[in-house]
Every structure is written in C-alpha cells, then in structure tokens.
Image (cartoon, rainbow, N blue to C red; front, side, top):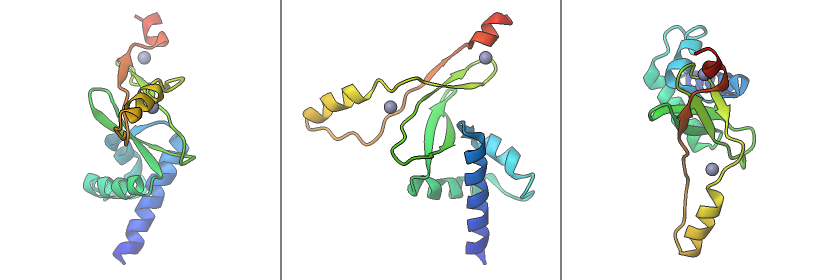
Length: 131
Ligand SMILES: [Zn+2]
Ligand SMILES: [Zn+2]
C-alpha cells in the first residue's frame, strides 16, 4: 500500500512541476500539494523529490541565498540556469550557460566535472520601474 501512495504523491509532484515550468521551492510545492493531499508533510515531499532527482526527471537549483528549487526536466539533456529577483522573487531564464567552456578546460586537465550551479540575483526591470 505504501508504494501505491508514494507513486501517487510522486506523480502529483511531477505534474505540478511540469505545469509550473519554473523552479519551485519546497515551500511552494507544499502549499500547492496540500490542496490535493491535506496531510502531506514536507519530509514526504523531500523523499519524493530525492527519488525524482535520482531518476533524472527533475533538476535542482540554488537560488535566493541558497534556497533549493526544483524544476521538471522536459529533456534529459536539457541544461538551464535561472536568475531570481530579490524583490518580487520572480524567476527568469539565463539565456546561455557560460560554464561549459570552463568545464572543457578542466577536463583537459583530467578533472571530471559532475555538475555545476550558477547563482545570480538582482532586481528585475519591473521592480526597478516601480521603485
Ligand atoms: Zn522583481
Ligand atoms: Zn550550466
């Protein structure tokens, strides 16, 4: 029975991330999930998130002072970074990844890079306009 329940929770988390299509924090996920599963605990969400990460179905991002966000990966090879606005917390796509060149240089030195993170925060156009 536990497995059936876990699968349902995992499907729900995955479809929520799919619909949102932007990185979501555990708090955001939790506040959406309780609408369907009023008793769901954050520890349960973390557990499901871990297995989705292990299955390479989602990506993990550190935004906003090391807060962890998760995003659905539509393609296994997809590679994206995000920028967050300090004031409205809106998340924007980083147009390209500047790290690959550095990775190639490191790998020429014999270092194998497994993953990397980019953390950028600032103030978005709208917030500047409204200041
Ligand atoms: Zn903003
Ligand atoms: Zn990158």
